[in-house]
Length: 459
Image 1: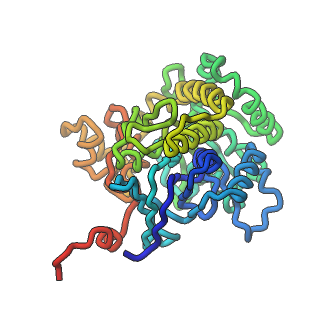
Image 2: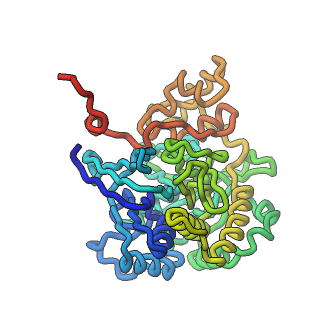
Image 3: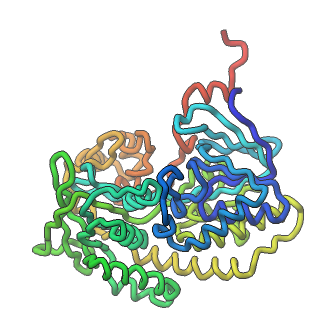
């Protein structure tokens, strides 16, 4: 088989905060570590860096906790961890000698590579959830994380006048980052109200200084904050020209008569994050809801497999760092046959950050009646161009879950395999979203699969 093959003790998949912390912790305890990531540089979405050729004078201005990144970056450069960037992992499997991780190399993702390891640590992160609304497919509508990635990685902004909308803690850094970059932010539209956050005040106490910092910057840039509001519709023909927002009542329904039009050329929208669990599911790891289930050492129920960060539940970079450290210590200890000894500070941080994450998850939820605003001609599955009307027709035919809707409409059968539309289809079907079993974590050329398992005796 063409391509590269590497052998190591521990392979860490994902070079975001969790993967970086895990790699450094395991390596410091004498374990050979290979860190694999699909990006061109380590750091993940949180520590995404601009290309060197862009000549960024102050990249730290775009980042939170920059000193933490410097510590991780310098530790990686000074240590023996082997970093394999532009390795897009599509499958991890158990073998007689441990595990084999299969990846595709480079931007074309056609040339195969393998990493053989005694143990695997999954730090695969998460992806954004965006729930549809009329006009959401217009050019100019981007995800909140996408807008942030353009700014951090490309030093470009998606437009001149933006609305940032949806729900969740990601909206704050996106709005402040765009404003600091010179974008006129017409409004920050958050569907959660202050009263709902106040109910979780004790658990969120540790987040107050960070939130206050963002609030001060929003005030400095005169960004209006519309709490308990939502985007009803995006307007435009060839591209976005504005959005209609409206207030929500206590039950989460749009209050008639509160609609207002906000001219803009960019809408950065997001409704929270979902864990990436494809590789874990392929290895047979148990899931707890939509996340990978782990024990106190971040071990999955599959021997030799650990998981940390957003894959085990959305909680932010600080929690991912703590979980990654604990997982790296545990993996190293078990490979050496010793007892894990993670830093007590990491254990304490994990407890506190998990409490805050649970509170944010409970508070920052999309409006419960968001499906009422979706017109029948609204595209729900962008890959297969399935509309909300087609989904509703499937429900009329007796479909009672997302899988049956998929069989009747092809929603979720496209390139993203339901990652983007799964939550929307489940919402329209009136059921809870469930993980979708996929044989591969990303599309794979047939030629690569054929070389993986050549058939003997065929001419």
